[in-house]
Image (cartoon, rainbow, N blue to C red; front, side, top):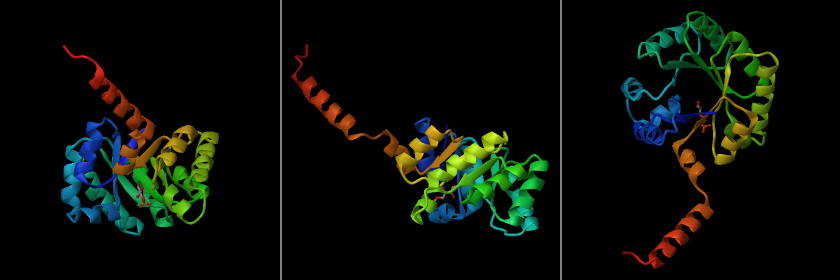
Length: 215
Ligand code: E4P
């Protein structure tokens, strides 16, 4: 399973790259707003890090507007994936962009039938939001199971990119189900490495090492 980092923070992206745990980046307008910087400046710097595919989101809600923004975004380089909301106008844009060879990430997916439509439109990635479904008492990971089943049934090439990941169990379940990608906040990437027994064991080893006679 590929790990994308869900962040527009250059520092976090660099840290994930240094760990060898960054196969790509996803951003959204809220993550960009958190940086307090101009999107074009942030995007240019992310592209320069060469982290793999970089999802950059359009803000237009009509097909023509999305296509214009896609033209602007793809000018940043071949790693740009145009992120488009799962609405009717978005599906139209995905179909046209796919025909032009532009990679797309269809975002704000909350149902398996929405994911079916994105695959039929030719999306490169579908982003189902598991954490936000959990927040409203649904089982986000059940949606991933359904999408993987449907895409497998019909051999769709669209990759399942698990989004709105909030904790390590989302990553565990994504990997067990066989999702193609999980986009993970930096904090959760670090949590994946942590276990209290590792810390306890290391403390004990270091304490015992002090008892070993040194030359
Ligand atoms: C990524 O593509 C999504 O925009 C992101 O994972 C949403 O996460 P959130 O629900 O924590 O905002």
